[in-house]
Image (cartoon, rainbow, N blue to C red; front, side):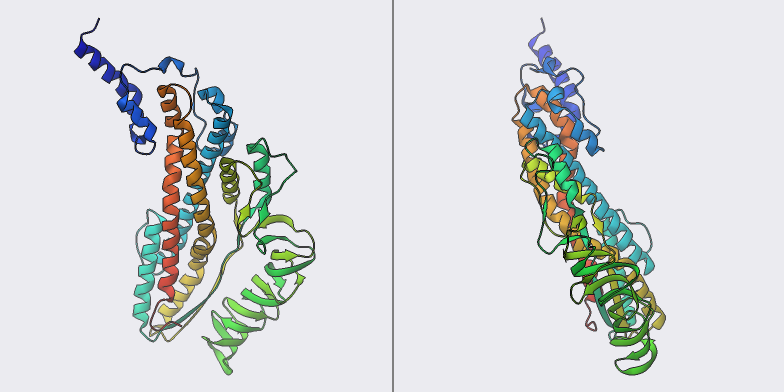
Length: 430
């Protein structure tokens, strides 16, 4: 028999051993506070299923196939919610990490190309450095600098079949082949073997019966992001052209191309498309993807978030194009350096600002709701406190990571937008 003081000391020791590893999760998952509030021993310690474990939290496939019911004695519906919720949480973290990597590369590349030194720990820091570097260079070029941008943003699209296949595996009520995911009208993208109505992202060396944004190997009529060899605003010569070029352009263009266009072609009317058609097609598109909002098949919120996130991790983006026209700078070499740095790095920054980042912001809100719901499911599940605590310890890290990603993604998107603003914001900018 222990004295009262010895009994209390032993209880505190046991609590530290069981609850200590979970201390970092208390703020993220309120139920773990029970560890600090329990009195009179640890009921349920002997009820933890033998061999209870966690799936590999770096593998969505492992999470999908994990048997939560067998490992933690939760109900079937709770098991399904956990599987979908944890998978969505991990996928959102992957999407956030890719966005951050794109900005470290794009913003970091722009900053370094303009003379900034050092490495950047994340995308936000890289974009702050890029905006500062652009501002410094523009100041050196003087108040008479004129800068214009023509941006053909990348079209980032998610595979609709990924959503449909995932739905059948995640939710038992969804019958394979009976339903399909729908795409926002006018945002469907894919291979069109007939007439495309919308825009066509052409393969290198294809002809464009419309307005080309990219490179043209023949005569152009439009804006030129390099040297115009022909006429600039009606005046013959070979010079940097801030207006309309009619002739050959050695940089990116936005206008008509009489030869082969490499980039995005905005079709004048229904026409054949040798690349990727976005909009509509006179026949059913092959390999359909959605460049807009996806409406998944009717299923649980957890599966909906998981399947949408799964598709977003496999998003494909057509290359963006940026035409930069500069004139009036006091240093021709520095002006050329700025143009080259912007045309090289801005497409990746714009990819986040107008493509993957905007899509991820919408997804982040959905995943947050699912994570909150999954946490509530675990907290309210049947069983003893220790079993719930062990389960929460298993899922706590991905849930916490997803909530952090949901908060950080909008910050990164704002950082990418700020770079574009820094490029165009100037008293001398058109």
